[in-house]
Length: 331
Image 1 (cartoon, rainbow, N blue to C red):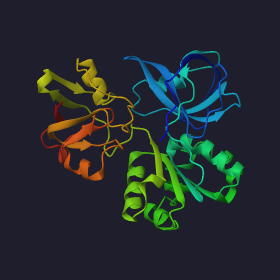
Image 2 (tube, one colour):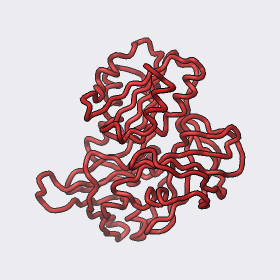
Image 3 (tube, helix red, strand yellow):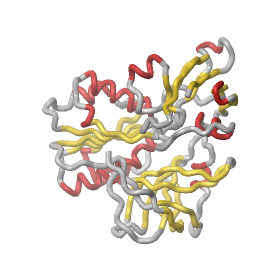
Image 4 (cartoon, rainbow, N blue to C red):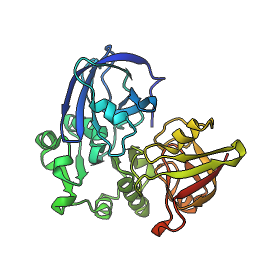
């Protein structure tokens, strides 16, 4: 993955804000001209939440040629910590702070064929990739997964552009994705690259199938959003004895946020479970660790010896025995 230089913050004006589904809103920002956003790019945005100002990252779904207009699409999270609520409240004329387009999910050129795989709002990260592959006449498939068609943004636009290259896999229409069939059905010549973005369950399933077929992990590229996990978010206790810190992580707060609020100075960077900088050792756990990162391997997650505090959580013991979850960490 590549990365643009340090983010450059500037004031942007909202020039469009409209719904594309009942939970996803399309927002166009106008800022100083620069360069067109590359496929897979995102912008960082300063949002106001009940707990203070924070930063959120949103994929760019469309960009003007000079980069002065950048369009993002934001899903209103059911367990929102305030960021998506703030974005959904924007109206034309509002001003916010955002960066230039940043890149850590680059579309590489030179593959013989491509598969774009999007789950839910993950469509925002790959929609521009699809436009580019279509324009260049590349060999590609576009697989779009969702629970209901009504919650899948941009379906009509995608169908109009990609035709029979677009495959809609909709759970409530009984056409859900068969991950094993998708991966096993790809040619074994090492000339196919998959780009995916979606819930952690979908991406974990694809990654496991990919590795079980002996495919090169470098040909499976992905971007994450760390709000999805194996268990529903719930409150749990955490302590770091060597720092004298003990606190409760609320269901709408991350472990990193709770520790910071309790006075612990923790290392972190991406806040999406990708870089591993916030990985810490687990001394003990009551309950089940919900590893929501893509940094640790399956083997590392299975032994629960470490976790990434920016996205991972603890769920109560199965069956509710023993009360709420509790985590003890060692730096």
